[in-house]
Every structure is written in structure tokens, then in C-alpha cells.
Image (tube, rainbow, N blue to C red; front, side, top):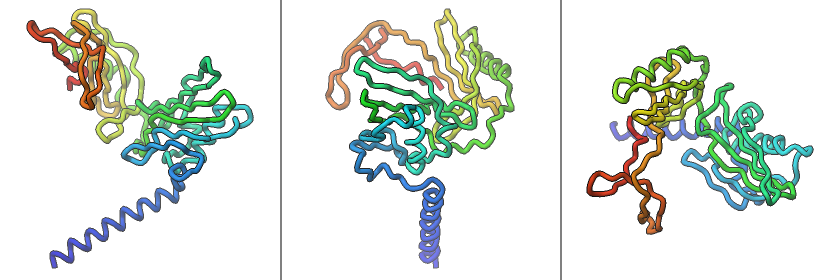
Length: 260
């Protein structure tokens, strides 16, 4: 009986996973990029979301508008990126033309009007107008239904300032920004702010949960080193310009950005 129960549970679990995939595909459509004959390079992350697509992605610019061409690409590939509304979620951050005549457009990702930290995609056009490459990170599966903070920006500043004062010292906080912060498999609605100080030198980045005031993440972004070194990477390649610290007898590499 025990064996039958386990087998039945596995069957139910497999069925649920398959049905979930069918529902997702029905809503977004299929991933058409994986087998697109015009795509020469295709890479995706562990969630199956494309991070680098290269090929003849658009032979000509739609109505002379490169931004509209990019949005149309994402609209046609909602099934690949699991994206709901490209026109609302992808906002142009920067557009520039290089000395070869290529145009590079950078988009920030937004969720219900709130910027997603790390959500950034780039589209690259050849001088001829062909959209050649789309790369970057689109943060899919954001499950935040509410993007209205319960904790005010002033309260978030006070929380970060007081928390840092307890072990680091006095700092001057900057203006907070309401963001969606992906961290360790979860999406948080956070206030992001920087706290600066001269003595001791610090440039602390804080993410304060905008729903309950918890410190989700903090790190000192100041860059400081005693000397520049060289070394060998894990794949055997030579690396130069490595920041090192002197402890009195040896030089070592220290990562001060991960003080949690």
C-alpha cells in the first residue's frame, strides 16, 4: 500500500507540473526562439528565459521606429520571455549610436510602474537597420500583486541609518527609490538607498522591505585597496588588476561587499 501511495503521489505531482506548463504556454504562447531558423545564437537561464539571442531578429525597422521594433519583437516572443505587456514593462533608459553606425538601446524593466533591480535588456541594430542582437536579464515570474508601500520612504531612511549607526558610524543618507528587488528566489518591494560617509569611508547600499521595514540586503559599495595584483583564474587564464589588501605580511583578496 505504501508503494502504491508513493507512486500515486508522483503521478499527481507529474500531472500538476505538466498542467502548469500547459497553462503557462496557453497564456503566453510557445517559445518560438529556440527553433527559429533566423536565430544563430540562443542562450537562456535556468528558468528558461532567454539572455542572449542573436541573428536576423528584424530585417527592417518598424515604421522607422527602432523602439517600436524592439517592443514588437518582445510582443511576438511573449512565450519565450514570459512577459505580459512589453510596452508597459520595458522603458527606454538610453539609446546611442556608435562610430560604426550601430544603434544600442537599453531598456529598464518595470513591474506595475516600479523599476526591477537587475531587470535590463539591450537591443542592438546594425547600420543597415537590421535588429541583430537582444541580450540582458528579463526578470520573469514576479509575484508581487501590491506595489504600494506600507513603510514610508522617510521611515526606510531612518531604519537604514539607525541600523548602520550601530556597527559602522554616522552616515548621510541619499534619496530612496521604490524598487522590486529579486533576492534569493523571492521578489521584494523595497526602498533602495545609499548612505555615504567620509570617516570611516563608506558607500552603503540598503534595501529596506517596503511592507514591513526589514533589512533585506545591505552592502558597502566602496572600492578600496592597498595594491593591484595579478593571478590565475580557475580555468587557468591570467587575471590582472586584482584589488588586494596588505595585512602586514601578505597581500590578500577580500570581498567587503557581502557583509550581511
